[in-house]
Image (tube, rainbow, N blue to C red; front, top):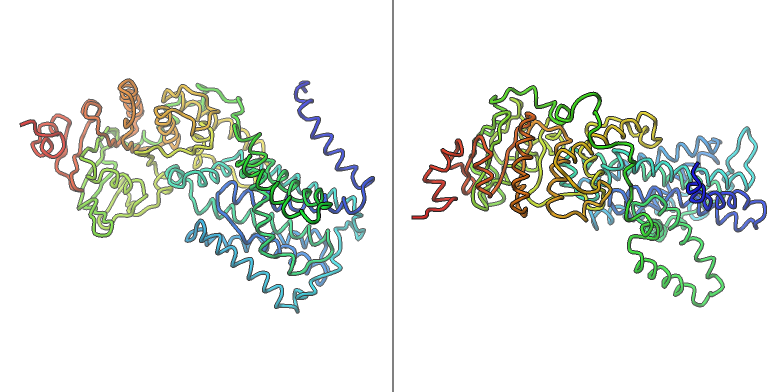
Length: 594
């Protein structure tokens, strides 16, 4: 091990040694405080997965904490189960409840989702009060046995070790999750739901996964709390506790690795440090909290991790052989089955209305495989609406859409990616807080088949798949001519580089049809020339391109076919020469110099 690595690891080793020695020299009260911190680290990791990774705000996690605590406590005291079985039941029960709560994510977001979770927390607290025959009501559940092995109860020191081990394991699992396709999918949904769907990431699947995992960890925290304290009652699981759980991750740093541990440590130790200032305790506590949040809006851990949440490993390099195939074969292997000139997409009498506005009216269109087919027309002609229909973001009001002779009318965006339709946007839709490399890796989401368990434990198979994915992502960046650092945050890029990144990200979905919505908008003349060459290279690999563009020199110089829209209707179609000679086009779009 290098000397620098030893030096970096030394503080952690010393801290761990101090924690392990704590039960043998400190008062039992302080051992209890550290154990409590460990319990809430587990809960904070669960909150971080939901709030930090996915951006969904829950103010009812005290209810899930109560579900875990009561499940484990009642099974231990009344059914005689060991801690290990009752804790497993607590995780399963809380996860199941979290799955039901996840259904709300489909219909409620933001403040409305927060209200749903608040209502859930209140219901759980009230049930714990009212159903005294099961929960003990105000009296709660007491004499909850500590964890044991072969009937021998753990002493306080070993209970602390168990809690610290679970807390450390939770942080490790969350760190592994963050570096996998699942973690990138969660973060993509948080950053930009539209872009995530356009890359084949199902918002509902990601948010449901986050809810279930977060609930399971919170239920486990509840079980640990019950068996550590030996007593639980409804007045513990109040709305204030839900707010505290949210503050743990906000103060520590949303979406960071160490944020849950740092935030929990600060919030639970701070009251002990200022306990001597009884008259000013709340003022001091509030002032410290406000100062931290004002000076460090990304959280304490965010100050250290914010610049590079995940730096690229350096194990993959541009130009690597990808599973023995050249780059072109990897990016366009699916397109090779379509014979050039064969019908790829059919749009038949499609209309799309927004209230009383008919954006697309009875439009019929055919896109042939292997061609560059451009779509032009004045602003408001319905071009982007058609792209949204083809990519699954809009459902037609009438008409049919077929892809490879298969009816795909009304398919969701992430399903369209699955059959080979990729797109870029008129205004770039990147994941600004993710790195350039991570943005491209999100595009490979559907092509990485490693399961959730493999992601959590970062198995050798997953590490191999990640190295291959990084190689493909870097090769795609090289292919489009991206000149920057793959470790840079996407939000820091110049506009032209953002365009290249978005195209590279779309390419790694391995499209058959690539929809480019005004890719030249905002580019310099030199960049437009390079874009012309790039689109030609993409098309030469067999990828069909549908191009929306206002730069007529680019359109007429690169296109095989051109379709002209005006007020949602097709007014002309043919080769560039035929379209330029059409009087309707000259009058409606290109202008009549006479």
